[in-house]
Image 1 (cartoon, one colour):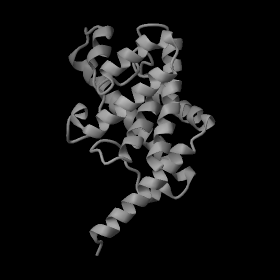
Image 2: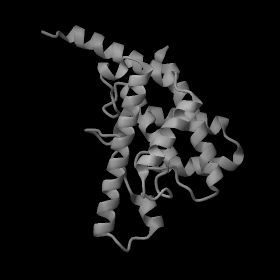
Image 3: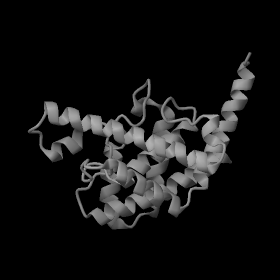
Image 4: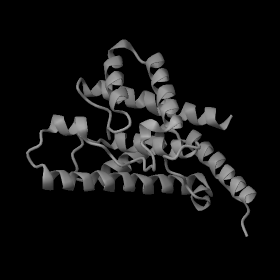
Length: 206
């Protein structure tokens, strides 16, 4: 019979391993995951949800799962046997994120075929972070958002700040980094955010 203390110990070990493998992700790992996501996206519109957006959302969900928040994804022990099994889990999570996005696209075309692209990008919510509470009401989710955007602004050049401001306004519900300006700016914000997510994982491990 599993006792509460044994469950806490198991969860603590899983949390530590998850953070460790997040820290160990290299730029090549991220590129490989993005290439995998791009293949899985198939004919889905990249203007609404790019491969990089998929990877970022997935890793953020896994990072949130290491907190005591009610949101996020939590790999099990069998997913944490090695970095290879962890990457396999991440690819599985990427599949889930893309499947959810694909279903939302099907519903959109079925029920709102005339809806304008800009209006949809502004209002669409992606079910990436499943939760029993509203995301913006979850204290740890709010704290993570605050820390992420504080660090983003600290490290970003001035031309990226409008992109960061817009993303912050839609962070809990948008499925992508909004692109109202140059796509190069969005790409640079994504890269900064990826680095900061790794920093946050390291901070959680300390």
